[in-house]
Length: 175
Image (cartoon, rainbow, N blue to C red):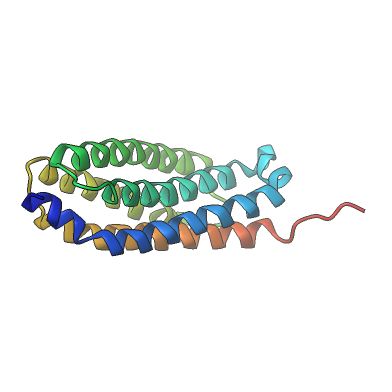
């Protein structure tokens, strides 16, 4: 095994833990949204749909990063190209949702909330793109910067999920 693959392999346990957390939280988000699907689909709740999509995207990105890191005997292109793809896609989605949320004038979160929900993940995805470029060059020193990226994405998504839960209220029961 070459030095690059060994350096990536050293992150195995971290990405097992991060991936497991992201997968679990995606499942809980699905359950919560499924129990409140009629509320989420209301036209008046476009901001909640956008927040749910951002939350799902953050959790899914962390899960995808973990999957890519867990592929055995990684090479720079095998790790770097998926990081560029996922990071670029999510950066585009995050910026698009931020601009949409600013146009909608969110009812509850305000400018500070927009920063927490969209700007922080956007910075994380931009940082990921820089790290991915370094990885494509065969460098592994930047992999340590993925730790705060993963933590911030999980924290931002968890906070979003909590806010969604508080806004949605208890699920309706049919009588």
